[in-house]
Length: 363
View (cartoon, rainbow, N blue to C red):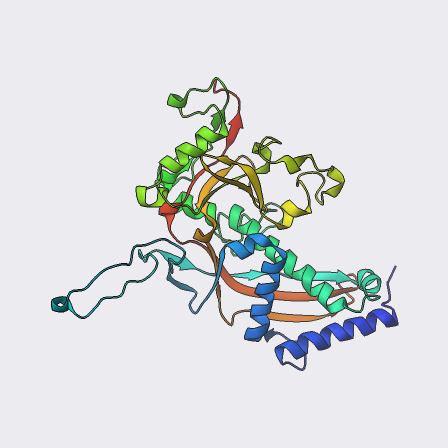
């Protein structure tokens, strides 16, 4: 049965078109247009306001699709004195440039809003703002999911086979597997490449586990070992947190897990909306560092890193958008968004991870 948009819904939709056009300085939002720099920054700011994790990492505009990792957020020593005989002074870059490359890929964040929903929302005078907020949250959570789960950038993605964006881009964990395999536990080395992309090699957590066999009596011991494996200059950083997947922790570390399941938005997998959108920090520590749960982090995984070591680079001026009615698309408002972006570890020295973590003793 065909659904017809109400007059009130049509006025709300026209107001949305007008608002988007005014912000971006375009008369017709139904053709592809580049986002105005101010509008582009507003989208980034909105995502950060709604999702605390994005506020804690770096989101950096860059000019080129391929370039050198910026290395900001990485501690480095720049203090010096210069005697009169050795002038002029030589300033240092306040980061770390080590000839590592970033690469950006075109990413589509297309959404649709059925006319029934538009009619339901059209009673709110801030319809355009509500819609923009929902799109910003969806884009932000999608970016985070790709950051944790992405392993490759396929020419044609398959969201059915890869529901977490595994084929959308090369994310942070995969960067570590490829660039610093000696900082990865729980996965065998690939014989051909020497990267930590081989078969799963589970790390066991159990009270009778033998550390000599690569297993640990508790999560604390594993976190200490990950930190101990970092270079000394990175190990001493006070910015490290231990990111741990929700399935590994219990009320001993995160009392808010006891919140009612009715608060969840995904069938009980998340603790609450706060875990979906926010960073949840435990009152306790792991390995002497703050323990946190972050959105979309994969099960059975622990990572030690400063959050400032994680970056998303996007190509400035690459955002494209157009928005229009598509009655043929099941009576929907369709909003096409795209941007060139990629995921970066500012320094692999400052990150270590363990995956395929399993409770129990190794046989």
